[in-house]
Length: 268
Image 1 (cartoon, one colour):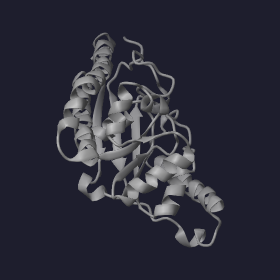
Image 2: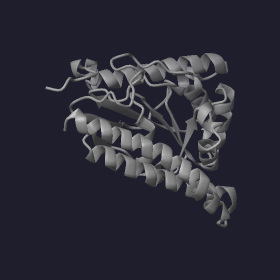
Image 3: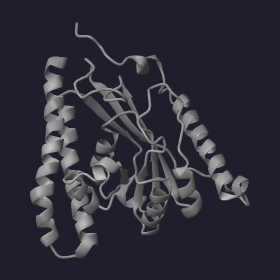
């Protein structure tokens, strides 16, 4: 499908994302607050609405030919309670895809969204974690894991350029050291890149993108090597270990081949 169709489809998708969020904040959320059950019930219902809305968005964008989605070895949601999910982050749609696939995830949102007068009300009702600083995120993430929630983190902190090695912040390591949760790695790839870092919504490749979300076995962390170390040093070592495992798996899977370097394809 040529870009002459894909660009309007992308515009419709992102307009729906904005308009849908505003309408839900103004009308849907107040209705949910009237239902019984308190904050925990409101959180579950808000996350369910987000999950369903993102499912519809992903369906529309895939049917419009912007991407083909492949899922490999992703566990059932009920098996992920209390799990720390670490995902690579090549594109803007990564979180949309994951929230459409896995209901009731806890995730970290940017401060700008958290403080937004409209969208902030939605993410707060959903019980998401604001990115107010490393210590705040670690503390809130630890509480979420202790409650048995599935916590999604992008350990790189931002979208990364295709072909570059993974470089992680230490938040994931600190959470692992504090809570010792099961850690599920998710490897997300998109070929050719779509809405990667620095790309705008109308910069659409000519060919449909191959979006793949692949899970591997939960990580077996090197606890013996970390035993007795001061927390800051253990976090540094574990961060390097996690980077090594992710880079090794990415290279082994052949995800950084020549196709990843092609960002735009001019129409024939």
